[in-house]
Length: 357
Image (cartoon, rainbow, N blue to C red; front, side):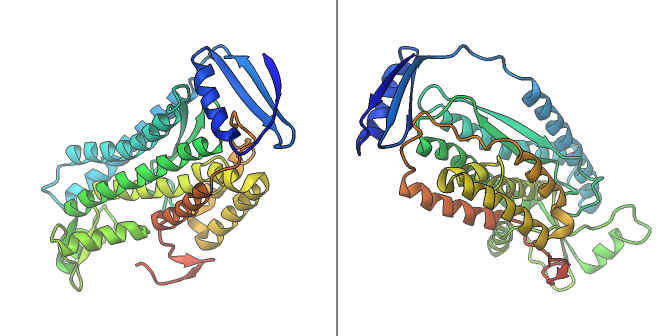
């Protein structure tokens, strides 16, 4: 490696990006660190490729199994409610929908991280044990999403921010598409039909889900356009497995955008607010989740504080240049996206709000 003392000025950020492009074609990597008053540039040979861990593949396999089992369970119940919807095709549709939302999220990560030709990302999916959890918000959640790490350092904070912002944005868009399909395949039962199916002697029960604002908006639009039958007085809306897949997509996007630990939102928080702001928001996020919906989020809060023990990824080759002001605006937008994708809580500090049945 070779070390240089450099004079940092207003053009150094763009000059470093140009230098990075030129040197990577020669198998070299530059790093810029220090301060604006005392900047150092180090150019070194690219390190040998490290052996890839099998953990991501194992976690992905467990997640796919969990998604498939959840889809089959939900479809077998929905077939009894709507006999015209066979269980196996609906289970396949549920699996494809959830995998599609997770897949486009991670493909967006990978494509943006490869923008400069060298980056790549590794997702660690977090499987859940659904159905048996006993918690309403986790009953049909086969996965908590993924924690994504960029294998090679990005050029600067702007490039790294883009990696973690685009993934949830694309995942939210995919969830909206699934929500439209899900609303059009769901069933609306009259009071008599509901009483006949969900009787005391029945082996199935109805479970209310906390939907997000976005999913509620989609249902309102599909009802206005005639894709979904209107829910009249005494009638009941029964979500199809595809509709529940959309709910899973919004919930996973919400978790991904949490400004905590090593989630996408947590890494964006560190890039915008620094280490101190990242630690503060991680603690505040855990406290708010417990306060807003105590019974449902204790598993998520435990997960946050376990992941918080791991250093937040955020290494960049240029550690001096500051993040662009436009990225700060996008960070605020990511927090708004998080709120729109969050399940509307039915209680606040265990006090009912009357927002659901």
